[in-house]
Amino acid sequence: MKFEKHWQLAGWVMFAASGVFFTISAIKNGDWLGMGSAATWLIGVAFFLMGEREDAQ
Image (cartoon, rainbow, N blue to C red; front, top):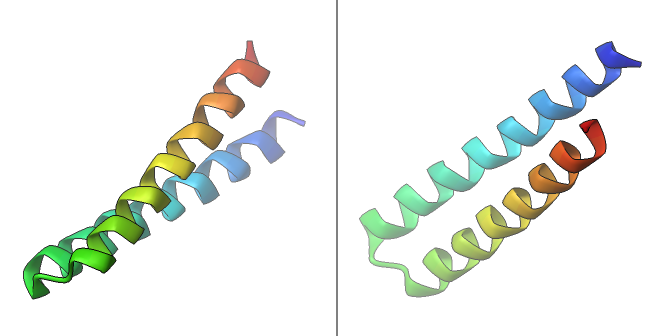
């Protein structure tokens, strides 16, 4: 069970990393819609990670 949680966390970290790269690309291109989408993505990932943290306790 603990091994599965490790892979779930790794997946969420990868989702967060993709959001960071998406944000960097949007900023570089001056894409306001992309920046909003990336911010929404990162906030959603943060909520899921907080839920995972609460489940672990």
